[in-house]
Amino acid sequence: MAELTQAEVYSPRWTLQLWRALWNWLAFFFQIFLQILQRFGHHPLLSPGSSPSFKPLPVVELPDLDPPVNAPVDISPASEASTAHVGRPDRLTVVLDLDETLVCAYETSSLPAAVRDQAIEAGLQWFELECVSSDKECEGKPKINYVTVFERPGLRVFLKQLSEFADLVLFTAGLEGYARPLVDRIDVENLFRLRLYRPSTISTEYREHVKDLSCISKDQCSIVIVDNNPFSFLLQPLNGIPCIPFSAGQPHDDQLLTVLLPLLKHLSQQRDVRPVLYERYCMPEWFQKHGIPSSLQTP
Image (cartoon, rainbow, N blue to C red; front, side, top):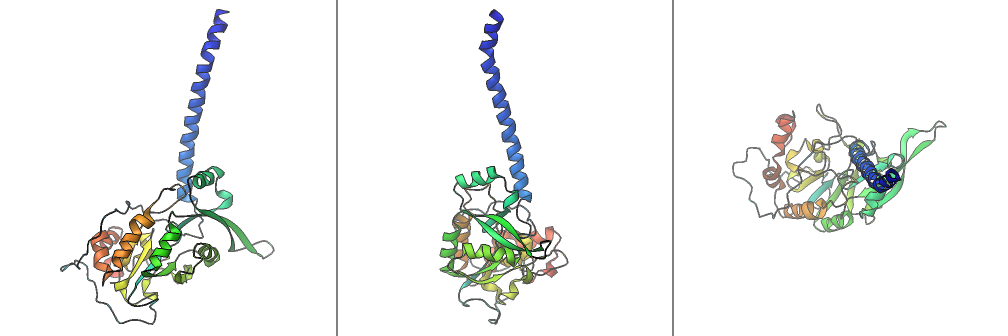
């Protein structure tokens, strides 16, 4: 009887310890699974490549900066307006990437319900989308894919406020069958003056799906590109703004409104955006460290 009483006393304690151990193991495996999903879970046809990691863009006050007198990188003067220029020549043109910059998209069938529910409970705006694939069904009919899209926090406000002082261009390496209906959902006010998809990118000796800004404007003084993959703008490194990749595991991300919007507002007040961006990011040197020669980079 004494042994039975002792077992009854210690049994709840052991049960509680087992539950705690099981919970810790489940939490551990969930974190590992979430990291794998963030790395491989994005829809491959919406974003063909991943980018090197960047440190968070610092939240700083932006003083009025004069172009450096002895800049180590040659910055050509503004050329005459080209017929390829989008928008008004006296306004900043902002070229925005889509996947992992404005949104993150997952194939619905491969997105765990736990990850989706966690993102939704944290307040992320989301929607599901039917996209026409370039693949065909057995009967020759176009294949329909189902995608779950999460908007980066503050996306709608960011686009609206940005359009007040800049001309917006959407430039994605994603296929149009996926990207076009997605952009229709996030740009209900038609704020993008131009939309460019994967066929508008070019291939170089070093990277594919490169976004050449000269197809948008020959005047490089007043155009910038925001992209989580810096290799996308390797041809115009002085015009690029590398941003942190966005995923469903970042429900409290504040890059659009806190970091990017003030920076773009400041750039809209400059005669030439390149000296400011060079001083801030030194992207030509970054590309050289990653094997991209300066001869490939166009000023």
